[in-house]
Length: 216
Image 1: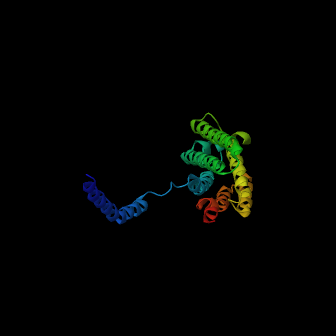
Image 2 (image 1 turned 90 degrees about the vertical axis):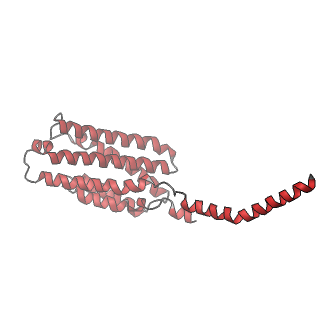
Image 3 (image 1 turned 30 degrees about the vertical axis):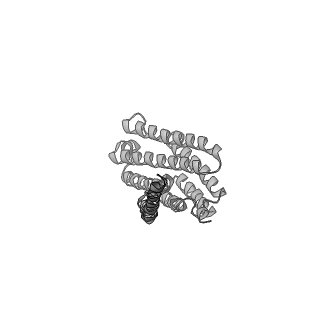
């Protein structure tokens, strides 16, 4: 029986050796076909949220042309659409802040940043809904009309500072973000300009995260 099993083992060994290159090729093909990593949510939000804010600024500017009574502007279809876009923009910035907070090394930022962003987006949506249904009529107090956006901006600002401190974002981009916030805070209708400056400042976040660290 010993002599009969030796040829079988030898044949099996020959099969394994012959199958070796084919197996290696199959593995290489499987690596090529395998899907890559999931796209980072922050990279998309850093691009989409400022563009939504820019669109809201343009629509608000167009809606204000020729409108004298603030109540007429609030009830117009264009104002309702612009308000909905603002809700999406604030929600995008809140989600961006939460995603960046989870990426930083300071885990204690995740909960307060997420809560600030959620309250900001919720407040903005509530004000938009109240205006659209006629429950809230302009002029509204500044704390009510812009409070949600301010909370979302505060959440985003905290995460941008953390990103800059950890070397994930240039300090110049943080300065541009501050300039964009100042432009947006001015009551001069410069929201489209502020949104463009914010888009430029967030451009480093649209790149592959930690690309320099991975290269090392």
